[in-house]
Amino acid sequence: MSVTLDTARTATRLDLYKGLLRTARPKQWAKNVLVLAAPVAGGRIFEAAVLGRTALVFVLFCCAASGIYLLNDALDAEADRAHPVKRNRPVASGIVPVPVAFAVGIGLSVSSIVGGALLLNAQTGLLLAVYAVVQILYCLHLKHVAVLDIAVVASGFLMRGLAGGTATEIAPSQWFLVTVGFGSLFVVGAKRASELAKLGDDAKETRKLLGEYSESYLRFVWQGAAALMMLSYCLWALEPDGSAVAQLRMLSIVPMTLAVLRYALIVDKGEGGAPEDVLLGDRVILILAAIWTTIYGASVFL
View 1 (cartoon, rainbow, N blue to C red):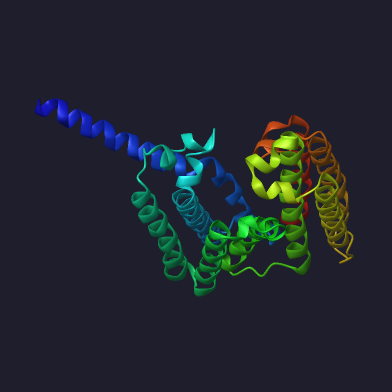
View 2: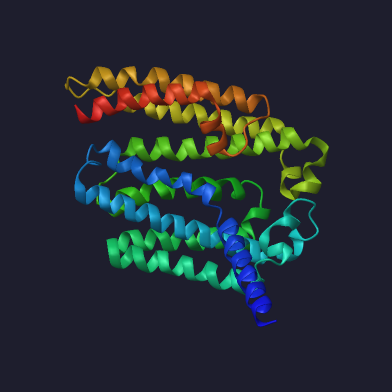
């Protein structure tokens, strides 16, 4: 009897751990590679100290983001139980108790902030704190406010890019900030547009806020953001500096433009889901990304 009870407890604990891992959404950690942007753009990513700090801020952002996912699912547990798909989430289904999700979520969020301040610097800790506060406000209310929901999600991408700079003490250029900012808005607006196209008349029932958007408005958002992103990137790439690698920077405009156009084609078909799925699931984009990486890398490191 005792063996049976011990086995049951072990199975329950294992289910809890698996549920916590699922709720932490490790698949979403791919977004945190944006912390590499500033060190790579500065041409210092291969310095041992810079690489170590970049790896650390990547881990801290994974903790921060997972903490927010846990808090979000804990806050939405009751509503998720009435949803045909979300009711299968670990917290909504009861695999992960709501108090446990709250505790682990708060623990991860606080740990990332403290870790950023103590292991890196005060600026990184502050940035992680701002990220946590903004994302918690999003979970509580802002995700129900049209336009602000898009802005908050886009700001998460931008803060990842900024974190790589603060952690390594590499100041990003103005063009870097503008390009990443509008690039983030492009990706988020495109995702919302694809969701609306897929759901159609069911959009309001599945995601209430989508009912406040129209396809034409979301098209305006992602197309405008894409145009501004490419404009800022071209202004950076075409900026004369008298160096031998200036032509390589100019050449990098070609694969970048083609990749954006390819992404836009996917979105226009209503297939622009999670950005990591689009980027990793399309062979043409992957090839263009490899070409851009080669050209851009040569312009930075040669």
